[in-house]
Amino acid sequence: MRAARKHDDDGLFAVTGEGRAVALFRLVLVFMAVVMLAFVSTETWRIWRDYRHAFVNAEDSVTNLARASAQHAEDAIRQVDAITAALAERLEGDGFEHLDRPRLHALLRQQATIMPQLHGLFVYGPDGSWIVTDQDAIPANANNADRDYFSYHRSHTDRHVRIGSVVKSRSTGDLIIPISRRLNYPDGSFAGVLLGTIKVDWFVRYYGDFKIDERGALVLAKRDGTILVRRPFVEQVVGRSLANSEVFRNHLPYANEGIAQAVAVVDGTPRLYAYRALSRYPLVVEAGLSRESIIAPWRHDMIKSIGVLLVLLLGLAVFGWVVLRQLRERIAIERALHQAHQTLKDLALTDSLTGLGNRRRLDAVFEAEVGRARRQGYPLALVMMDLDYFKAYNDRYGHPAGDQCLRRLGELLRHMLKRPADLAVRYGGEEFTLLLPDTDAQGAVLIVQETLHMLRRLGIEHAGSPLGQVSASAGIAVAYPALETITAEGLMAVADSALYEAKRQGRDRYCLAGAPATSA
Image (cartoon, rainbow, N blue to C red; front, side, top):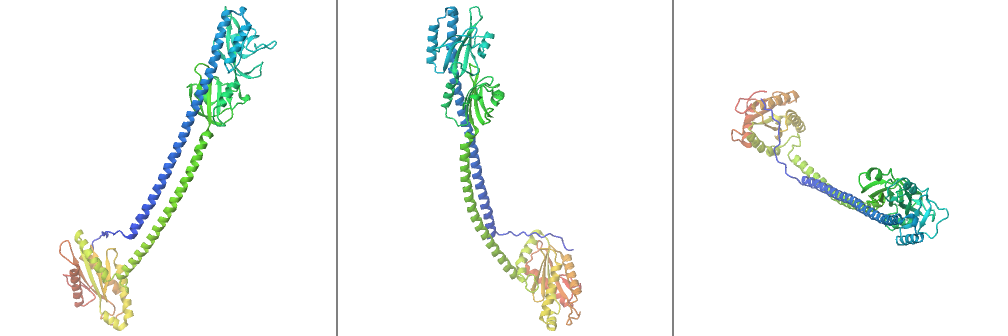
């Protein structure tokens, strides 16, 4: 019985020129991809780093602006607070009935001169009338009882300084910030109000000295969000509330200073804000840089960087394309050479008449198959087959008919051999050889029997044969290279002897070496 075996080609494939070219092509492709990815990754990281640095620098700038503005406001108000506190103590100590108005006027005028932020200093009586001021003249029937700060001190007994919302001066028409405190009679009753006013314009000019972008903002507001001063200055904005802004709603209740990105409620500009609450007074300072001013330089640099990166990547791509194109051409040339070489090799190892292998092909694989059978311990069968009375066939029907007969036998042998490892060759003339790896005697006999049977079924006429049709004789030799010393030449000699015995015993039969000839 023929042993079943799947043929595995154990041969080692040599690295061809085409293989090296393909490997180099892939290496260059991977290298170019890695280099491009490295460039893109590095530039992406640099752009992101610069973006973060732009905001870090902006945060430092707005923080410093907020601190400077807060300190400036606190110093200005503290000076007014101090002078009004001293004046209130003097007025209450000397008594209002002994008030020396000319002397007090001179004192107020002196203080207003040495404090540039002051718009004026005023003393009002309990009914709101002007008692004394730093100004040269008091308007007729002047009365400030209707002012918010006056109403507050009249109804509240606390002695702390109060910072009011911006109002317009009735004497000069200037916008001013009132800083007031209550005056008391010795019995604690309401004696009037001492008022110091700071010019809004003084803050506006101070804020104007800071170099910030056109869409930046500086704001001085009360703790409840009421705007006192803002840059850019628009009079209609003064008095508006920031209570619903991001800073006042979500940050200031939890921290007296910090950083926030928000859209301004006044003009709708996205900004990065730093805010700071004054330590001694209920005021808040905001300093904001527009997001556009922060991003614009970074965006400009990013566009230039991306342009340079694209040029570099394009250059690398062109270079890689040239190299890969040359490699593709080389691969195509080597593949064509390999195919041509393989074609020539196949032609050299193929019988041109039958399309089977020739003797050179058998010689090329025989020793290797013997060695493989020895290593793997399986049997190796060899069949020598010869057409009977073929010389007489040629003499009677002519060589073209003889060639056709050989071709038909070749087709039959190709049909009979199913496994890739099996090999059928035209050994010479009308003689054919079958090399059957991993096939024992029973399997080889089955193949030969079926082949001879199929040849008879073809019914090729042969008047020069006693059978009247073409037939063949075969000799079979089976060896176990793992158990005995065998060579290709020795196995072929045994099969050839068996073939001779089959012919001697009458042809149209096969003979297994070591057994009598048998008719298929």
